Structure formats: C-alpha cells, structure tokens
Length: 304
Length: 273
Ligand SMILES: NC(=O)c1ccc[n+]([C@@H]2O[C@H](COP(=O)([O-])OP(=O)(O)OC[C@H]3O[C@@H](n4cnc5c(N)ncnc54)[C@H](OP(=O)(O)O)[C@@H]3O)[C@@H](O)[C@H]2O)c1
Image (cartoon, each protein chain N blue to C red):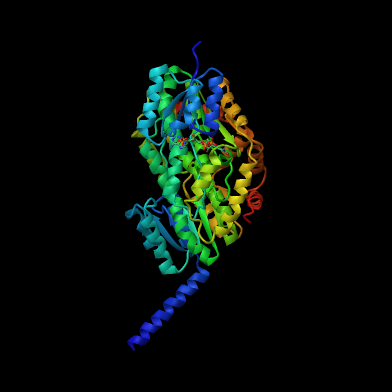
C-alpha cells in the first residue's frame, strides 16, 4: 500500500512538473525585496507565473513565500550563491523561461571624488551581477531552445549627468552587454530586452543619498552638490512609484515579439527626445540650468 | 608664455605614442606613461619624459602625477589613452578575466583623472581627453564586455565634462574606429586565453579571420592623433570626435536603424548569422 502511494505521489509530482512546464512560465527575478523587483514579482505571481526572487535582504524578501512565490537568498556578487539559486529553480521546475536582472544600486558622487572601493563594488553588483546571472541561466535556456532575459537598465544607460556619472557608467555598460548578448543568442531563440526607467520612487534614492552623505566633497563642488541634493530630494517626493515600470516589465515578459527596449516613464522618454534633438553642449547647458533653477525654486518654496 | 605640460597614458605604443611624438615636435612638454618603459626610448630621445606607470595602481599613478607637478608645477592636459581589448561571448567569458580590462579602461581613466583634477582645478584650466571607441556608442556580438567598458568611459566622461566645466576644464571623448596600432595584437593574444564553448565556437571561428582582415586594412593612426591634439588645443573643443569612416558610419547607422535591423547587418557583416 505504502509503495503504491509513493508511486502515485511520484507520478503526480512528475505530471505536475510537466504540466507546470507547459502552462506556467518560470521566472527568476533578482532584487525582489523592494522596488521594481518586488512590484514585478507581485504582478507576475498574480498572473499565475512561477516566480523565484533572489535578494540579499533575506527578511524583506520573505513575503514572496507567503504570496505564492519562492524566496531565494542571493548576493549577486557571489558566484556560488547565484549558481545555487539557479540550480534550485532547475531542480524544482526543470526550466527557467525568463530571467529578470534587476538587483542594483546607485550612489550620487562626482567622478573626481568617488572612492575606488565604490567604483569596484557598484560594477560588481550592477554589471557583473547581471553577467553572473546570465551565465548561470543561459546553458539551461540553450538546452530548452527558448528563453528571455530582461535587463533593467535606466535612462542613464543612454544619457549621463553630473553626480550620476558612475551609476550611468554601470548602466551604459549594461546596455552594451545586453546589445551584444542579444546578437549572440539570437540564433538560439533567446531574446534580450532592456528596461529604461527614469526617476521612480523606490529604495534607490535613499541608498544613493546615504552614499553621498558618507563621501568627501571638496569645497569647489559644494554648490553643485547642494543644488543637486536640494533638487533631487524634492523631485523624489513627486515622482511615481514602481508599479508603472513593473507593468512594462510584465509586458516585456508576455509580448510575443518584445521590443528591444522599453522606456517606462514620461521623463525618460522626454529626456531621450531632448538628447536626440539638441546638440550635446546645449543639452549640458539645459541640464545644469534645470538643476540650478530647480534647486532655487525648492529653496524659495521652503522659505514661504 | 610657458610651454604646455601634457600627460599621456599608454604612450609606449599606438595612438599614445604617436600623439606624444607629435606633441613633442610641436613644442609641448610631454610626459608619456606606460608599463613598458623600454618602449618609450624614442619619446625620450626626442625630448619627452617617460614615466613607468600602471594605471591600475594608486601608488604608481600618484607617484607619476607628483613627479610632473614637482618638475613642472602644472599639468595642462591629460590624455587617458591606456587601454586594451579583451573579447569573448557574454555567456562563456570568465568574469574575473573581464574585470582586468575594466580596471585599465574604466577605473584607470577615473584613477588618473582623480589625481590630476585637483591640480587643474587649482590652475583654473585644463583639458582631459578620454579614449573611448566606436564601441563606446555601438555594441556587437563577441565584444560585449569591451564595448561595456567603453560605454562606461562615455558615461563617466559625459558626467565629468558637466561637473568640471565650471572650473574651466574641458573634457573630450575620442571615438576611433579600427586603426592600425598594437591593439589588434593584444586582442588576438587575449583570445588565446578564452574558451568560447561548443555552442559559440563556430561564431568565433568566423570572427577571427574577419577581425584579422579588418586590421590588415585598417588605416594608420594620424587622424586619431589629429583629433586628440585638436581636443587639447582648442579653447572650445568638441565634446566627442568620432574618427574613421567605420566609426562615423556605424554610429550614424545605429541612430537611423532599429536595433533588430542593426543587429542583422552587424551579424551579417561578421558572418556570424
Ligand atoms: N586601435 C584601434 O583600433 C582602437 C580603436 C578604438 C579605440 N582604441 C583605444 O585606443 C587606446 C589606445 O590603444 P592603441 O590602439 O593605441 O593600442 P596599443 O598600441 O596596444 O596601445 C595601448 C597602450 O596602453 C598601454 N597600457 C595598457 N595597459 C596599461 C596599464 N595597466 N597601465 C598603463 N598603460 C597601459 C600600453 O602600454 P604598456 O603595455 O607598456 O603598459 C600601450 O601603450 C585604447 O584605449 C584603445 O581601447 C583603439
């Protein structure tokens, strides 16, 4: 009797694995403890996807298990953790249909003053972190002869501004890596999509400001830093939350033929248009004027 | 008027070497920096100064910049040119191997700039010229990480330009296409160190002849040297100089065509379809 039950259980599990594999797509997302990752995980679970979410913030990531997803402990700078996470998905589901590379962060700093440790670490998370995940899932996608990799870039993947240069450098690098990869795996029926949000209220700004506070800023740069901070702190109280961008990510998952990139916020689309229209020097001037004017306006309103 | 003092990294070969020699001829005080100091003899015999420098080392860069300040009291121009290409597929390339390239191309550019900028700010003038590449603007199969390093150079240079313009410091980006220097030799040496993996081997096999042929036919570096010197000499230099028909064409094409069409053209050209 016991044997029969075991046998039946085995059959059921196998069948459910096969069925799951057929109707429910398996998605792995990094950085699901907050922001875009969390909003996207929630939406995809609601839609019936099998969602695995990796994050370094273990406690904040536990909600996933409660809403029908699967939380993974994953520091994207640690190759063994990345590999173990991907292996777990394969062991349990037999496949990975979609990878959403999203774990990343920024720091506000001028190029002259950013610390070497920060240079290294930000690239290790933002760029090489994406690379580690890609390298771990691609052998499986190649075996399946299908797959989609969605890399969260940024509007600063294509433009770069004062105080955001290093973060922009990581995002520019992600753009180049994604473009190359898209060409390299095209013949394997794997697609690569870039997501370019503008300013969105997530955990991003708090981290970036904290890094700025902790860094040394020479007197020469104080005015720029102060304008930047005044303007940006105020902007972040007004910008939209992550759900709109998550909708675009879901679109990138579901579209039969995805676009190569999705600009997810109005400011991202506008900035890109302005950049295309104007000469670079005019763009620089506009950015610095906008910063100064924006900061002055915030200061004036605060006085009132 | 005192002579202008220029620091050029990667002056032991290629663009850096030719730029150094040309600037010496024009009367500049030229400091050439590289690891292979023995390759900078000509630079010294023609009146320049050679500094042994590894741009990945803080001590080495700090010492080099200190020496120039001690000897000349100023640095008017910095050419961040030290760099190399390591190619490979995104899936199968060892990440630590790629980091070595970022350490030179990206971190190195930032490191030397960080040591030089305080002096330029004090002077209230200066120019910085950063060597990017056509692949700082477009990226293609098999050189994703190299392109990523140059895209990063573009972003940090754009930010730097906007940050230091207020101090009277100019920042320009040079985007060469393929030119005949020591570059392709280094790329081919690096290729010996990578494993493409079975799935990608055929692409690699067709890439190598394509690459060799491209560099056999590549023009000599004068136009790039000219662009670098123009970026140093003009009081209002261009923000970026794309040099070479392939660089100008590639960047224009990318702007005009959709990504997928561009992908197909590139893959077709590299016979990687
Ligand atoms: N040639 C092209 O087709 C092409 C196209 C676009 C962009 N570029 C860019 O142009 C720049 C110059 O390259 P090139 O074509 O002239 O190549 P090259 O002839 O190989 O010269 C490269 C120079 O970089 C130096 N270098 C490398 N690593 C260094 C380190 N850690 N510290 C200090 N110096 C270092 C080398 O000197 P040591 O080895 O003696 O240190 C050498 O002098 C590079 O940034 C390259 O990416 C070249």
